Image (cartoon, rainbow, N blue to C red; front, side, top):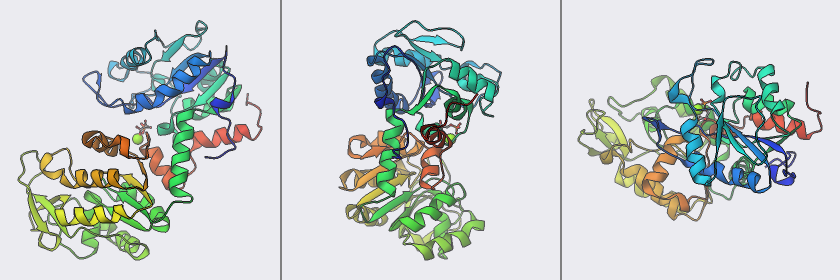
Length: 392
Ligand code: 3PG
Ligand code: MG
C-alpha cells in the first residue's frame, strides 16, 4: 500500500484513547446477523489495540437509517453483543460521545448514521468524534469510498490519524493484484447490470488480459454480439459500450447457458446453446461447456480478480456456474482477490474461503479502488501523514 500513511501498528497505543472506525455493516435478518464476515475481519485489529493497552472505542454505520431518527433495526447493539462474545470480554455500548471510558475498556458506539451531519461530513460532528480520542484508526475499508464525518472528517481533526491493520491488508492485496500483477490477469465481473459496473469494466479493459462476464452483465454482451437473449435482463442502451469493450480486450462469451421461463425457485432449468435462446427464455446461468472453458482459463491465470456471481446462485438449479467458478478459483495457483457482498456469499456457500488469496470486505469501495479512484478516507490519511497539523 501507500507507504505515506501512518499505521496503527507503528504507534504506541498503551494508555491511549484509540477510536477505531470499522465497517460493521453486516447483513441482518430479523435482528440477527446473517453473515459475520466483516465482523470477523475486524476482530484482529480490536484485539491488537486492546492487547497493546489502549482504551478502545469502535464506531461504525449499519444500513442507511434516516439521520436523527432512531430505529431499532439499525442499532449496533446486536453487534456489540457479538463482539463481546467473540472477544470474550465485556463491551460497553454507548451513544454518548462526551462520556469518558474507563481505562482499558472496549466501547461500541451506536450507529454513526443516526447522528445528524454524519453523511454530509459535518465538521462539528467530526470534531466531536475527534475529541473522544488521542489516536484515530481508520480500518473500515468497506466504507473508505465515503467522505463522511466518521471516515474522513474525524481523520482531519484527530490528534493522530492512522490506518488500521485491516485497511492496510486490503490496500496491499489490491495493489498486488492490480499494480504489477502476475500475468495473465483474469478479471471476473458478474452481477446483474452493466450500468453499475461500466466504469470498472472500462478500467479492467486496460489492465486485464481477459474479462469474464457473467450474470445479467453477460446478457448485454451476448446481445452486443448479435446473439438472442429472449426476455433476459439486458441493457440494450449499453450494447455500444459492450461492443467497445470487446474491441479493447478479450471478453470470452458463454457458448451455452441455462435458461428458465420465470425468475423463481421453482423455475425449470434448461441448458441451451447460446445461439438457441428462445424469445420467452431468461438466461440465469452459464452452461457446462462455458464452465469448462472458464475453468481452463483460470487454471492458467497468474492473477484473478473476482467480483460478482455468474448466475442466480441463490436458486440451486441456476447455481452450477457460480459453483464451478468458485471451485476453479479455489483450484487455481493464481493470486486471487475477491470482493463484494454476493461474491462473499458465494465463497461462503461453496466453502472456498481458505483457497482464495485475499477476500476483501469491500463492495463499493473494492470497485472504486479497482476503477482507479482515490478513496477519500485513505487520501486524508495520506494528507495527515504528509505532515499537516490537525485542523481546527
Ligand atoms: C457497504 O456495505 O457498501 C459499505 O458498508 C458502505 O455502505 P453504504 O454503501 O451504505 O455507504
Ligand atoms: Mg454500498
